Length: 115
Image 1: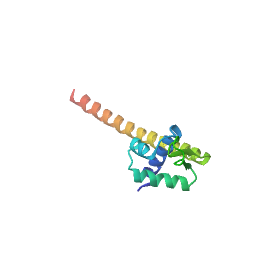
Image 2 (image 1 turned 60 degrees about the vertical axis):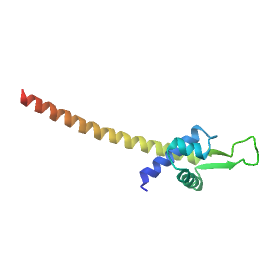
Image 3 (image 1 turned 30 degrees about the vertical axis):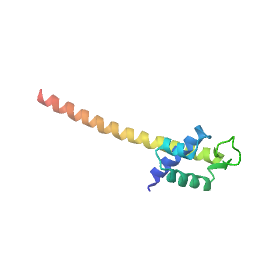
Image 4 (image 1 turned 45 degrees about the horizontal axis):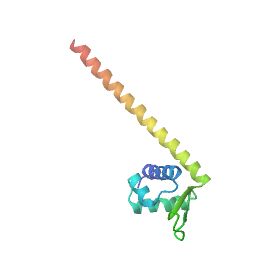
């Protein structure tokens, strides 16, 4: 798996936890378009790195099975991943815009020659 894909998945998971701590893995996997096994693997990676905490509440029938919490390190990591993601997207946009501008310029030059 390449690092960008892994970073994007981790960013998506961290954002989901930040927005909805009371979700369960099945719903989170479905919402993020990941398999349940993949999500579980990623959550365990994030937990080992100290970015996410989760606690099991199976003994209490009135609570959900797990609650997911971003640690301060997780919030920091989410911010860094988000900044890097935005930089990549801005670079992609700049490249696409250059390509578009060249194409339009070339098209306009060809139309000028035909007239």
